[in-house]
Length: 235
Image 1 (tube, one colour):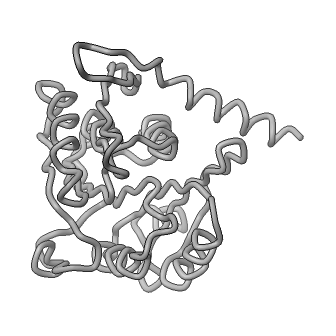
Image 2 (cartoon, rainbow, N blue to C red; image 1 turned 30 degrees about the vertical axis):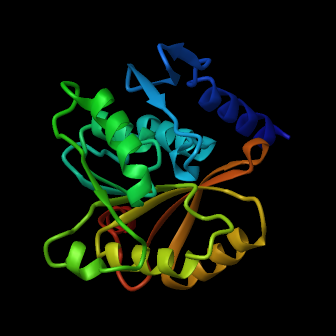
């Protein structure tokens, strides 16, 4: 009972970071507060990936609340399925060098939100770029030169036909010292099946379980290597 109350309080605190939608001229906005900054996000309801889902808020809350343990300052970070850009924006505000990726039809709105909320506020300007899961990974992100400290993902697993390609993308980008922070909303069986398959390649640690939101937050790292954090903990 105590755990369920605590998790409900956490879920309430996370959702409280969002303010009511506002209308400025012809554009509808939603406001969020992270890193002591007001963030204004424009959604695009005609594109599925350009709508902000609660999983992104859960991941952003964790990044801010755990900044001492999982500092993003000066770290190389890539976000998969960045959508409206909230996770990219918060990561940038926390000092990360962020590569923000999504499909071509999402990039316009993503670029707009990222630039509007990070310009003049961040040490590093985020890079917004196309990434189609499973395609041209070594050509676009060669492992020898693209070493990421963190892979961030929010709500990238749902009933779409590209789960194999997503798995291959995680596998390509996650190197020896890379950590994956992944927030996921459970809807249907494909989500559970993906988690089972994911465990075959990666160590998986549950960080948050928020039943009221049907969301879990995971930390993961390669099975064949140990991250620095894990190595330090073992020491």
